[in-house]
Length: 92
Image 1 (cartoon, rainbow, N blue to C red):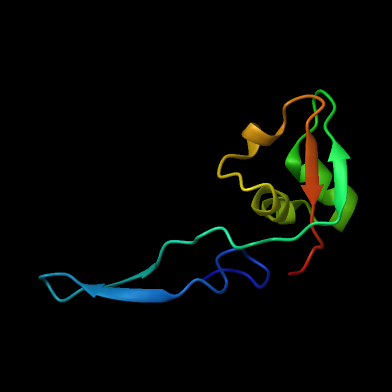
Image 2 (image 1 turned 90 degrees about the horizontal axis):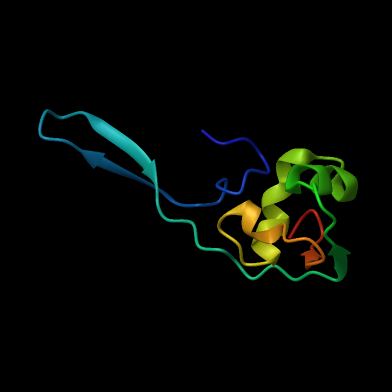
């Protein structure tokens, strides 16, 4: 259902059977794991998390690693100019 490396790859999957007998598969809630980071990045105006992910990981779809390290649910919350973002390793 999710590609290798997706933030949802290891989230448990459950099923629900509705009254008509149809089986519905779904993922349980994903809680932000502890994501240690050893590099900091000062945000400049106009930056985006996918661009930072490309710069640090060469993969723009790994932007969520930066969000996890900074305990953010909504990526734009991290992009305040001059803020210091924690940049974790690409795998964790």
